Image (cartoon, rainbow, N blue to C red; front, side, top):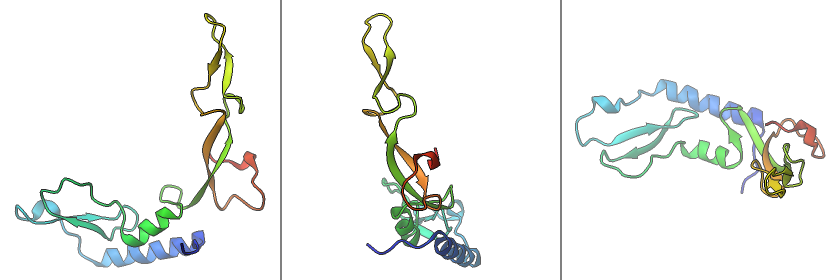
Length: 139
């Protein structure tokens, strides 16, 4: 797998593809004749992501090839940066996997927010500098 670009490099690549998409005419699927192939556009850069026949049963690809590579490397279009994930202690049960006792059975209640006290949290790659600090977790 190729090395992941920095956030700035990825933003520049996406901006270049958005500028290229702005210069290309978009195909309005509703104005085409019956039976014409449907064109779907990338959710990140607005270039053509997929062209499928009108009677397709599969979902169209949400991203073009270049953006698919970025998403596979951890790019988040919502956060506009790469995200890493870390397994950290649950905030509700503090890593124990249970909290409190059931008032009827007197058994420990299992935590409904985690699996055995651990939970997967998003961490912005730009936030991480050096060793992992759980206080810098972005929820």
